Length: 348
Image 1: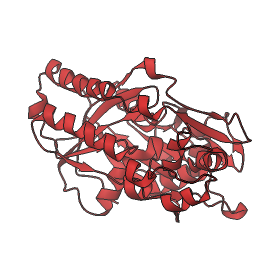
Image 2: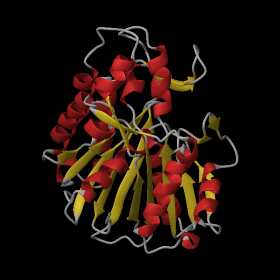
Image 3: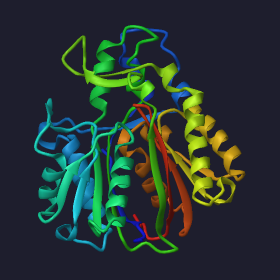
Image 4: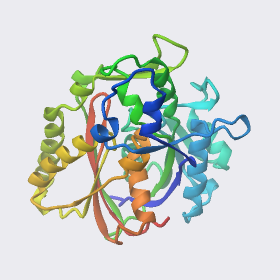
């Protein structure tokens, strides 16, 4: 079977930084909960809204793709497939694109005219879903390489929340914790002992499908995110993901305790939730992998989250070559899962 690896990674984050304190000051209510302390989010990046510099989902994704190619051995016209995983699909102010496929438009924008293309959408697990599909396609011999990309212009839901929140317990509270980002990764069939995607699995617990929903606002002209925060942070859901990882390790001839992970990357949605999930993971692994977070400075960037964490810590040279990393996605749906990889090739 072909061995896959992360061949290169690219990123784009807007320059504008907005603090949680500033966001709270824009609300029309007083006595708001201490959101920074409760969520762990101090700052987030926000798209440029100037007409001549507008940073839509498309622009964020395209710039991440260009950065990814700068660090790759592949040229755009050598890519076999492009998979787009954006939740937000904006191409301009107030313009949400349903067709053609985002992957097609992005591929054309970077000159990947020979690549096949399609979109996937799986909430904040979107990029991980794209990685899973591409990993399987390479191992099945359908393609030799490909790029998974996402651009998330999420703070459009923050704008709606700031306009509409009227109480301390509003269901749009989580919309105040998001940030904007674009990420891209190239995966190919040249994996080896130093660079390999060992396994990737996802699972959906559909009973929670209505816990977190993005949709047109029911109050004003905007896109809103409605979340049952208490139900979303359900201990049983987190435990089920860890149990599934342990069961997978056992059925594949491994033991969770013997995996030897150096680092864990969780979805960047809540500092207390990340700490709780990591306690479960440490108990299962019997080791103490270090948690990599950027939540405090970038917030929840949805489908780009895990790869933004990875990129930022590579940039800061905090991940030694040959490190074994476990990424655990959590997403609306409710989606959970895990992706294990050894990384040496990636440079930023």
